[in-house]
Length: 125
Image (tube, rainbow, N blue to C red; front, side, top):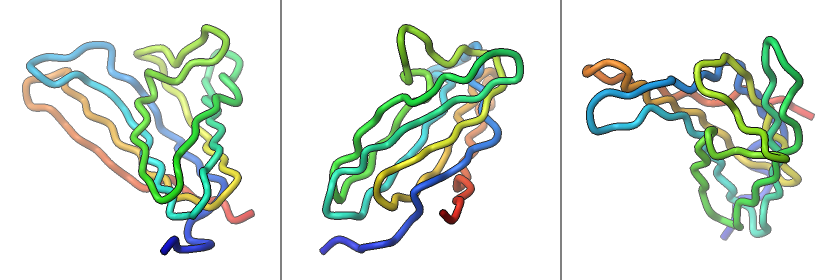
């Protein structure tokens, strides 16, 4: 049974950065995990904001009902534009149904890799 009204429809991730290189067997990357506990598909829109360029707006992603989706930020693309490596950015996630959003970064630029994970900031709308 799905859990109705658990989660939020707007989430903010203020600190994004795709490391430009990797060492060892793991590839540096970042992911947005979207958990959809609803009985309907979540239609998600992702916007990336940058310090020195126009936002990359309205990237569409679907998360099936009662599923989780791990979305690598480097795979997000709109009109041939992607989030570049080695550039700070922030992300806004909007969904047509309540979801839960978590953000993770694997930095393997050094042999002693670092994994960071945090909940995105929910906006009550």
